Image 1 (cartoon, rainbow, N blue to C red):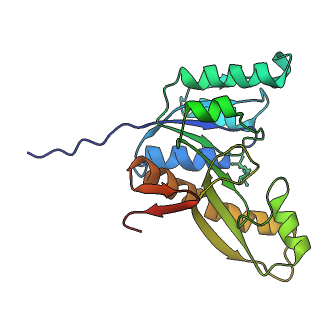
Image 2: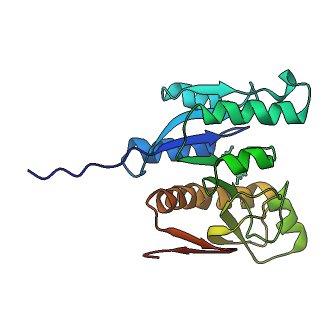
Length: 209
Ligand code: GRF
């Protein structure tokens, strides 16, 4: 009998808030749609709803609370140490509200990705959906990208487009984008973990589309 052995890639998710993207990753993993499993959630906030989601699924949680560190530099080192101990194959920022420092990114080259609710390079940073509405764009969307030291500036792995409707509010647009975020993120995680993603400067190619 032939049995296919799936590699057990180790995914560490970093999240600060409600954690619906974390939930999408967990759901994909539990239903066999993910090339790996979430070995831990790391949060910078003890109040993150994401922690409760992880707990419900028996996923270990680590809180690296910014308030417990005297400086940003010490917090960065604490975060690096916490993640390093988990030996991740991939680090996924899913609503993680802090910039990662150079030492962190140098430790995990090509292994840190982020999801952002806009069609980058438009509308970087906070309240991307509001920025899109205020600008009056007709299409919005989301982007998964490799993380560099800038704010939402790393090479783009994948994007999804949604229409902006005439009576959209920030909430209705955010909800439409969020649906796409959840499936795009799972798709991009699988692409990266399967080794199909090649990066040449800013240009990212995914073998097999
Ligand atoms: C998402 O819109 C994500 O794109 C952005 O922060 C939000 C996090 O949402 N980076 P959730 O915590 O995953 O529900």
